[in-house]
Image 1 (tube, helix red, strand yellow):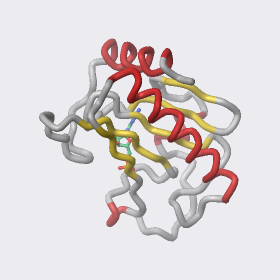
Image 2 (cartoon, rainbow, N blue to C red; image 1 turned 30 degrees about the vertical axis):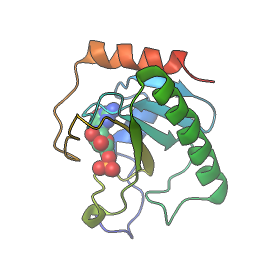
Image 3 (cartoon, rainbow, N blue to C red; image 1 turned 90 degrees about the horizontal axis):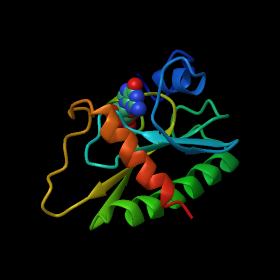
Image 4 (tube, helix red, strand yellow; image 1 turned 180 degrees about the horizontal axis):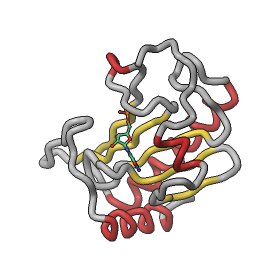
Length: 145
Ligand code: 5GP
């Protein structure tokens, strides 16, 4: 998928937004949805998406959508740190297939990091245990300011 293509409403995050497939949600408001990555690269890997925009990548996003996504990413990262006590965290955002993107609905990854835990490869992690994912989401939700 190139950087320049129409938005595909059958992408997996659009299906999550429409409630057609399940997701382990952390929190949401009118503008954003924050949910657990089902193939986590580390414990507590969270995704942040817009509920209103059809931007596929950073080049297409409206300024007000980007502002909402950035604020939600910061708020969620603070909760992740409080809940899981990582030693650091990575914010990742991929654009275009050649840039590593696999789902073409703009999103930010929040990936907690520990020095002694190697990061699983992007797109190479196994599926999470659903009960463990729900428990982690609950811990992050409880730590939201
Ligand atoms: P990208 O490669 O586009 O930056 O990131 C897409 C992310 O979506 C990946 O980290 C992948 O693990 C995650 N993902 C793919 N399919 C699903 C799904 O059905 N549910 C959830 N929660 N995450 C998914």
